Image 1 (cartoon, rainbow, N blue to C red):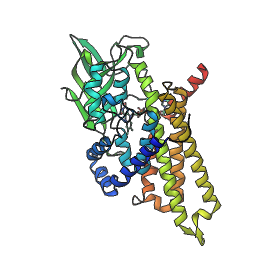
Image 2 (tube, rainbow, N blue to C red):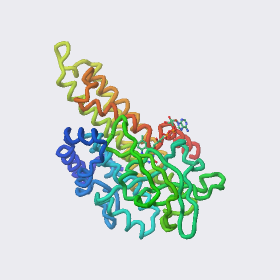
Image 3 (cartoon, rainbow, N blue to C red):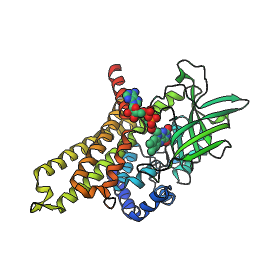
Image 4 (cartoon, rainbow, N blue to C red):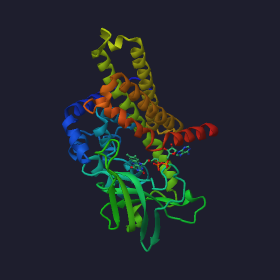
Length: 383
Ligand SMILES: Cc1cc2nc3c(=O)[nH]c(=O)nc-3n(C[C@H](O)[C@H](O)[C@H](O)COP(=O)(O)OP(=O)(O)OC[C@H]3O[C@@H](n4cnc5c(N)ncnc54)[C@H](O)[C@@H]3O)c2cc1C
């Protein structure tokens, strides 16, 4: 693994930074947050520059890069502005499942529109009775009826579900299976199918432009050809997907921590107390040093996880460690940054307020930190 970015990767990083500096204006962010509306225009522009699905193969509209470059894009967008960056990096959430397990027809039908920014994807695993236990008997049931599946049940916290082209949904296809996870399958549900009701969950702590929804399925009829991967292997496909997709979440942690550190360094240089810049108080300087240690370590772990995935050797141990460490780094670094800003961190006029507020979610979604530690321990015991 090379610790330096290649020239091409530096160009990608610079291009994303330029894009964010130009497009992520404070005014636009406030508008989208207030309206709790997805930033379509920004998303289309980002896709036009190749930033959405940068790791998708070129034949399906992507740029043919890997998880490493996707981590670079993610970090830069979130570092610039997490309120807008997170919705954009989730524009293609779950599409990797189609690329990994889909038929040629499914890839051609669903992926290019996402990579071009013409549509969004959604992937539904979490149910109201708990998202952490993905091995349980699912409440969302898909039963065969003629050539179709008929789906009933509900999911919650589903990103993009009210505006996506399709919802990749994990369902119980064999309600009698024991253990239950051996009877789960993944089905692509076109979002215009009758019987789907997606309701936006309003009033989130942050990332309000990201559409987080409750979804109810009532007698939703889907052709059996929409099965994604193998029947009753959905749990295993989901585990494989999450092992890789959590690398992007780790990169979100790096982005939020780096963004908070940047702002804290600038502020500590400008702010004068006791007749000198804040940064000259050793306690503050050491805080900044500790924050930088966490950011660097989080980035190295994330890059290692991404590099392994790009070598065709995704490592669940490393991706869970990267996600757990980076998410914690995000929480701790934003907390210290807020401390350095003092009372000003409490005003939404200052960017640090949003970094502090948004960091927590990275420790929760795509596997809470306790779930990650279970994964890590399981890998260690197996080793
Ligand atoms: C903004 C947002 C976007 C999201 N997007 C999506 C999406 O697109 N698709 C999707 O499917 N889901 C999505 N989620 C759901 C998210 O993945 C879940 O919230 C998460 O997996 C936790 O599930 P839960 O909220 O049901 O908490 P629960 O499963 O009820 O867990 C609650 C808490 O219990 C603790 N806990 C859980 N398991 C263990 C354990 N084994 N040992 C010890 N402690 C434990 C953890 O602290 C955990 O936070 C999203 C959530 C949010 C908030």
